[in-house]
Length: 154
Image 1 (spheres, rainbow, N blue to C red):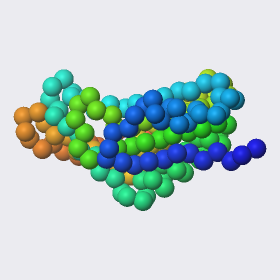
Image 2 (image 1 turned 120 degrees about the horizontal axis):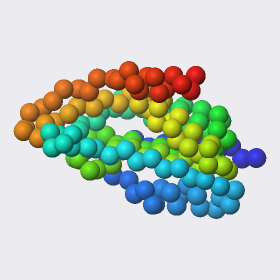
Image 3 (image 1 turned 180 degrees about the vertical axis):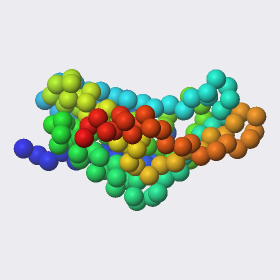
Image 4 (image 1 turned 90 degrees about the vertical axis):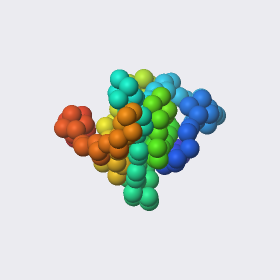
């Protein structure tokens, strides 16, 4: 049995969901389910003009890789891709992509959820809001609900 390694990237450029899905599933006839999650920048009902995302280079990728390896092992995933963008992201644009492939649907769903719950709380990314009226907003504080979602996996 081959060792599965997660595909992890932190990048400023947008990603192509279909291209990433094709790359992950090509030549894998044992995949029974693929779950994709794409997180988008919202405009907060017109109040937000952009999100600015920063990360700790090197550490963000390492933590994402660690989370990916845990998900692969825990849910017997056949493949996993996680991409997180940084820089200024406009409403409607992609922020994060997680693709989990497994022999069965529940493992794919759980793998994708696990990765997102840990990315939101463990990977060193920070978000700053930019208001539609031109005001530079504040850094977004961590949410207790994100910690609660992560803690259900322990």
